[in-house]
Image (cartoon, rainbow, N blue to C red; front, side, top):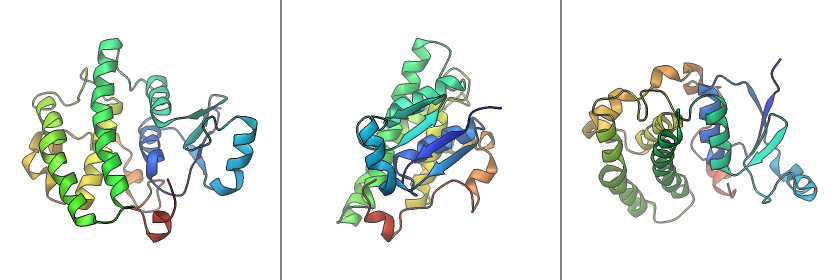
Length: 209
């Protein structure tokens, strides 16, 4: 029997959501500990929470922190990280571009002046980010190496986040819309009651995630 994977985070999307997506695609069963305020100091005291911040993932007898490190470990463990160093660096470039864009969307919910910031996100998404993925998917089904990778999973997550804010945003990016590997993601993750978290509500907006 495989070891249980435990996610330690707030009951929110935040930086853990990409990790939830990737574990779902890898078909890994997880449990979540969302009582962050109660145990954070304890983990910090024994050194488990290396930088005194979450997300943290317990997997393979380790307590992993730092989002990119966690994503890279999971991606490599479950063959979602390319076949060689050249494919991995391409996956990393695509992935980090998506993380930049998703961070803009996440931060938006916690700041004032939302209309101007939404306009800025829309402009950058359409002019800086989406054209890169549209070009990369002009022929291939997947972004790197003809195989599903971390970058494809994050592209799906990011485009769904964008569509929540701008429902018609993919109209000008048909390759991206058609090539999204939706069939590779268990449909239950996109249904109510799944481990996918909703958009931030007022309670979450008061929490630093």
